[in-house]
Length: 158
Image (cartoon, rainbow, N blue to C red; front, side, top):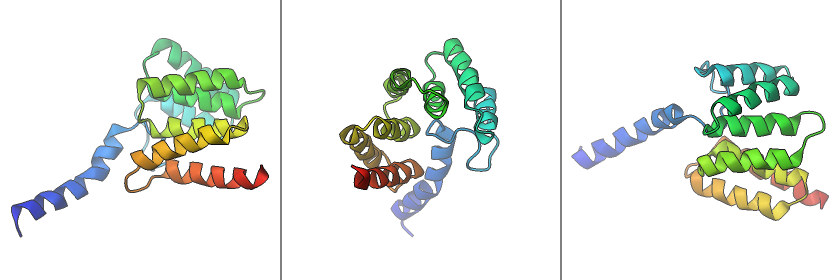
């Protein structure tokens, strides 16, 4: 085989490992079966598994105050707020936007803010984030698939 083909095969085999190592794309705490290394994300995942959104929000709110430049923490805090009782959607959007300001390619934040836009009835904004995910997920990804399903489920209800 030529060197070019070897390089291509190596690159294709390497991509999943690089993507997993990059983190921060909505795999908040072990969806892949690998235990998270970040204790905040581990605590969030535990609260999420129990659907304890108040605890999930408390954990991530504290994490955001300690590390305000962490896009994952903003994303997870907004997610917990959105899922919890009496969601303050202004605060939810504030933290999703901050996550995306810190990391414009954060797939999880694009998925979740798109879902939040559907909650408030803004289909065009949800579709904008779906289009961004379509661009970011060259070979497809769960975040794109999940938001696409949410948009498709929302459209007949209009």
